[in-house]
Image 1 (cartoon, helix red, strand yellow):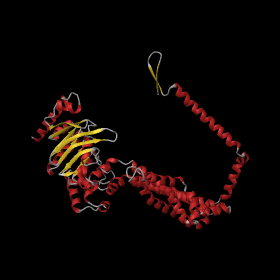
Image 2: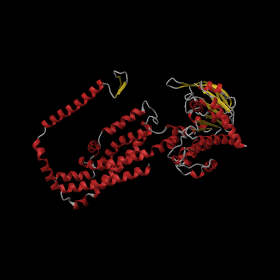
Image 3: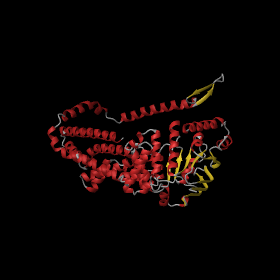
Length: 272
Length: 267
C-alpha cells in the first residue's frame, strides 16, 4: 500500500508503490519465460513421431478393448469382494490406531507437549509420507503376497491421514465448552467424553468415510504388486493382453467407486 | 464466611498482572455483583476461585477448605460445590438439553456410568424438576443448539444448580442477551439463590442491572478492589473510581428509574 502526495497536496492512494509494481511485473515475466524454457527442454527430449502417432495407437487399443468380456465378471466377484474387505478392514484398523494418536498429538489433549506430541507427530508424518502402494511392495516382501499385506498397507497409510485430520479437528474445538464441563468437577476422561468427543463427532465421521472412500480406490491397485484383490486379476489380464477383460475390470471398479462415493456422501450428511 | 479470598494475585505468563493482592469475603447466601472495566480481572477472579485459572499466589478458602492447595482429585470434589454460569452459555452444543443438565452431576458419578448415560434416578428426577422450574421441561430432548439465547442460559443455570452448589460463579450472564431477557435471567438467578440459600459472585458490565439485582457491589479496577459497598452507595464518584472519568448522571438516573419501575410492578 502506498499513500503518495500529489503536486496539489491531495493525498493519493495506490495499491503498491511504483517500485513494488515493477517487481510484480518482473515476477510475472520471469514465470512466463521459465515456463517456455521448460517446454523447450521437454520438447527436445520427446520423440514427436510417437506423439503424432498417438491417436492411431489409442484408437487401436480402444478397438481391442471393446466389447468388454461380460462373461469374465463371474470370476471377478470374489476379488472385488476381497478389495472392498481390504479397504474396510484396513480403514477400521487405521481408526483404532489413529484416534488415540490424534488425542496424543493435539496440543490441547496431549499428555506432554515436549515429548509425546513430537513423537506422535513423527509417526503421523512417517505414515503419511509413504504411499499405500509402496507399503504394499514392502509388506508383500515381508509377509508374502495376499490380503493381509493389502490390509496392513492400507491401514499404515490411513493411520497418519486419520490422525492428522482428527487432531486438527480436536485443536479447533470450542474451549469454553471444555471449561464448563471441567468446572462441574468432572474427571479428565469425563471432560474428554462429554465436551471434546461430542464436538469432534461430525469431523470424525466425515474423515472416516472419506478415507474409506479413498481406500476403496487404492485397494483396486494394490493387487498390481501382489497384495490381493481385483488388481491381481487386472495384472494377469494385462500380461496376456486380454484387453476386453481389462475393460470389464474397469467397469466394475467404476461401479464400486460410484457406490462408495454415494454411501460416504450419505453418511456425512447424516452425522452433521 | 462461605468464601474467603486473601491476597489473591494472578500474573499471566505474558507478564500482565490481572489480580493484585485481592482480599474478598462472601458470606453464605449473599448475592454479590462484581463490576469493572474490560480487562479489570473480573473473569480471572472467579476463575481463580474454581482454579480454571491457577492463581500465582494468595489463598482461597471455601467453607473451611483451602482450594488453592488441593490436589487434582480433591479439587474436583471441591469444584462440585461451585456452580459456574458462562457468558456464551458454554453448553455442549451437540448434546441434548437433558445431557447438558446431567453434566452438572459428572463430579458425582463414575466414568462408565456417565459414558453410558446411566445417572442415578434421583439425579434425573431433580433434572426434570429444575427444568420445569425454569420453564424448559418440554425442551429436555432437544439439542442444545436448537435453543434461543435465553433458553440456553436457563439450561446453563440448571446445569450449575444440578451440582448442588453452595456458591455460584457467574461470568457475564447477560452479555449476549437482549435487555428484557437479561432482566429475566438476572431475576431467575437471584430468585434461585434465595430459594436455595446460595451465595453468588456475578460479573456484570451493566451497572444498572447490578444495582437492580445485587445488594452488594464490588468494583474492580486493574486487578484491585476500589469499591465495596451497597448498591445505594454506588454514585458518580465511585463509578469514576472504578471506570474513570465520564458523565455518570445518565447511568445513575436510569438505574433509579428502573428501580422505581420494578417497585411499581411489585406494588
